Structure formats: C-alpha cells, structure tokens
Length: 214
Image 1 (cartoon, rainbow, N blue to C red):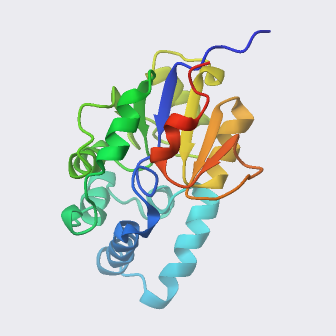
Image 2 (tube, rainbow, N blue to C red; image 1 turned 180 degrees about the vertical axis):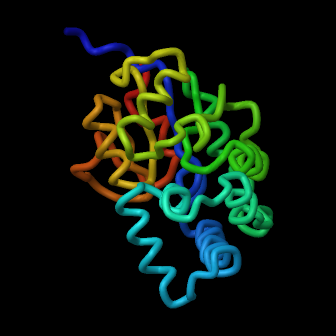
C-alpha cells in the first residue's frame, strides 16, 4: 500500500511552540500545585507524588483530578493558566516565517484548552497561521498520549489517515504513541536521534529543513 502524502501538521502548544527554557511551564506547574492545595486541600508535601501518579495513570494531572476529585475542568484550566504570558513569551519572526512556508494544513493539538492556546498564539504573534485548535475538550474524556485522543483529533480534522499527518511534540511518550499509530513524528527540544520519533529538532524553527512536502 502506498504511503499517503503528508498534508497536515498537528503541533503541540506548551514547550513546543516556544522553547522549554522560557519558564512558562514552570509557572503553570506552580499554579497546578496551588490549585490542588488551595481548592482541594491536599497537603503540599503530598502534591508532587499525587501529580506523578495521576500523570502516569491518566496522562495528565487534570484527568486524574477529574477521576478522583471531580474538579470542574473549566475552573481548573482558568486557574492554572492565569499567568502573565508577556513575562515569558516573545514573538519569534523566524518561527512565524518558518510556519508560513509550510504548505500543510496546521492545527494546534494540545492537552490544554483553546483559550490558553489562543493567548499563547497571540503572545508569539502566530495568530492566523493555524486552521484550528484541538484541545482537551475536543479529545474528552481522553488526553495525549492515549490512542483515543489521536483518533478524535484525526476525526476532527476530517477523518485523516495518520500517515498523512506530521505530529510535533516535546514529550517522547507522545511522539512514541503517535508513531505507533502511523503518524510522522517530530520530537522538539532534543539533539541527535531518538527512538521515539522519526526526526528530532532542537527548535521548531528548524522545520523548513524537514522532508514534509513529499
């Protein structure tokens, strides 16, 4: 069977569109801890262990909190993303130009929500470059790297064959899961080769050098 032409890009948001050393995700993590302590009453000394357990079992802290504490998703997301993005993110003209040169349909595919994604895109001056956002609501009740999450995103994009989709993420567990489903995967934020992705790049602006139009 012939391999379909690559037509579509699924790009992660946090620590993928922007470098992981900005400190933004660290601030979001602090607010997740605050939510768990202030809203749910969990002792501070237990939160790291609980988060790790939820991350491993459910894919994200949020899905674990939903399963075990019945938190309101929108309330949680509004709280943890209440961060002054301008303190962490700056527009990158080189990244914008690189994305504009890609002759692919482009979607944000994130375990965050669309409101946060739109704020990040605005802060990075990347508005208007993506055809849509597939967020935690799109893939509910699942999240990356669950196979069902990828299937729901493919359906939302029009029933795509995963072999026609480039998936970009900063987490090896996610690129590994996507690769197993047939996606062409790119791992961001690393150097050299990696067994969990088809290609590895240090920054997203390296995308023009990838064989995506074949």
